[in-house]
Image (tube, rainbow, N blue to C red):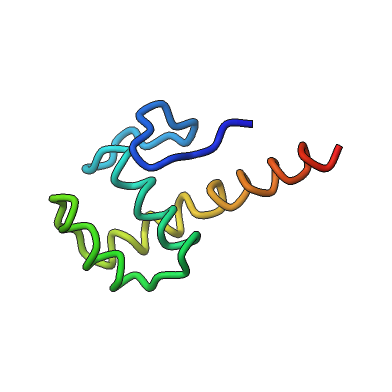
Length: 82
């Protein structure tokens, strides 16, 4: 199973039609779930990467793509336990 990484341009999750590149969206959602950050924290961290977003954008990405990010570690766990 392939891990979803920040900056991976070949993400299996469809980001087509969004204003920001897939690397930015995947980083925001990954940081939210992996490090238990608040949406306001994500809003403060992304300008360090040169991107200005609102916490509402991060919330929308979390709601839209969060489930798919949550499934990736679970799938890896199932493969590792075999």
